[in-house]
Structure formats: structure tokens, C-alpha cells
Image (cartoon, rainbow, N blue to C red; front, side, top):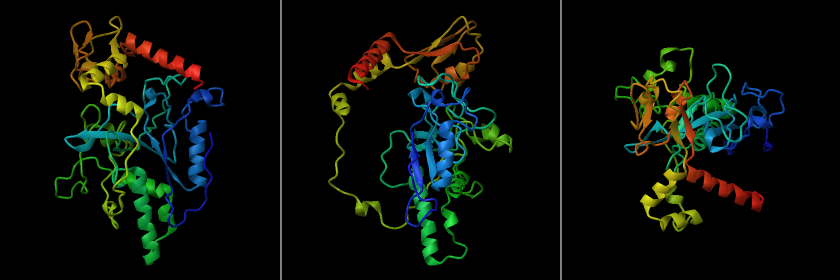
Length: 351
């Protein structure tokens, strides 16, 4: 891989932030025993480029089962998990996020890729599921752009103590993390005007976390410092400059799906997607999976766990919390056939 060249000093008018949504498995790390200890090859590239090019890398949170290992151990970037709507508000971590230190192995990795030591990798949560962005509100890079625009305006206006240092990527990172929403303010200002209460996959809020109880732990395991805060867009309204007749090109897959009845699509997806399967010989009936299941799809009797797949949302929380390796993700037989056919076609066409 390569890092894009750029100036070593931030200038007025440019946006020094880059969306980063690809990764590199540890199998490509040249070290004899590669691990996520802060010295992984991709981590070093991000940290070097952040310093040299004065830019903030906004890195997709760890979603390793998607087949793309994410550089979770970078220091100078900002790792972002994504939220989904609950009653119209982005305030719950999406099930697709594996959390700060996942135990699932990516198909492209030789083993589980998780940070060494107590370091956690998720810094911030931002909207990322079923969204349509017009304003930069809710977008990390868009928020950085507005913050840097504010610095530019202060410099042009000759505001006392204003400086180009205000555009430094780590200053931007500090502002975003320190202004994140954790618990919704009740109107008395005691919670600094926070706009939402953020929930993890188990519907627990910040107060339920070890990061709240222990000041030595700065980051929540799954939520980082909290949710990207709301921002106020000052200046020209996007509605005044929007291209009214612009249309996105329709994807072929979308055209096909529109002609297929919704229930049939859902049924097909469930037949090919991985689902958690209980290894009864390993199950100790400890009920950890039953307590963790957000859909209430697991019941544990005196001997073993049972999964009601009609309720299962396939978030794999049960697999994550099981200490006895009694629950494992498995793809149904039809899924193996479909993905096997896809891989065969890809080999034929050379992809």
C-alpha cells in the first residue's frame, strides 16, 4: 500500500482529514511474529502520514468478519464505530461492530486480530447505518472540516490567541473526543448539554461501564468516549446550493431486488447468512449468552442453550460472551453453495 503525499504544514482552506475504510491482515506484516502492539506495518504508515502530512485519519471501527482487517492499534488516527437509529435517534451501537477487542477471526487473517495489553481501539461512535447525508452534521470528516473552517475564520478576523496550531490533527481529535455525547442532559446543564444517551449492544449506558467507575480507563470498550456531538452549520445553507435534478445511478443489484418480494429477500438472506450454532458438548448452561442476547432468542435449561432462529438477529453477541467456545458462527448449507459458486466465478474471471 502507499500513503498519499501532501504538505507537512496545514494551510488555510484545505481539509486535513481522510476517511480510511480498508485494512491489511497481519499475514502481510513482515515481522516474524506480527501482532497488534502499536508496531504493525499499517499502524506505522498511519502514524507516519498523520505526523508528516498533518492529517487526521478517520478509521472504520473493527468489523473484522467483513473480511477487511482494520488497523485497530493506531495511535494518531481516530477509530470510529457506528450507531443505528432507535426511535429516530442515532443512539445505539450497531450490531455489525465487533467491539473494541473482537474475538472473531477475519477470513483474511491467520488468527484473531486484537490489541495486546489493556489498550482499547474504539475512540468515537458516529451515525453509520441507513443514513443519507446532506449536511456534514453527523459525519466525522465533515465535522473536522467545520472545526478547521472556524479556525480559518478566527485567523482572518485576527482573533486573539488564534493560531494554525488549532488545525493540528490531534487538536481536532481532542475536540471530538472531549465533546462526545454520553448521557442526555436533562436541561439543567449538569451534563454539559449532551444531546443523547448512547447505548451499547446490551442496552447499557456509560454509567454501567468500567470506564465510568475507573478514571484510569479513558475509553468504553465499545463506545470509546461517546457519540459524535451535534454541530451547528453556520453560513450558506446546503439547501440553497443543492443540485435539484441530480440523480444517483441505480445499481443493478438494487433493480433486481426491487422486483423480488420483500419476504422472499429476507428468507433468502437468512438461508445464506452465518448464524450462531450451539456446541452442546461444550455448553455449561452458565446463561451468559441468554443474558447477552438483545433479541431474547436464547433460552437455557439445566443442561444447554437453545436458539430460536426466528428471533435471532445474528449479531453474534452470544458467541462473543461465551467463555467455553460453546457457540460458533456457521453458514447454512445453502450459504456454502452460494458463496462457493461466487468464489468459483471470481477465480474464472481473474478477480
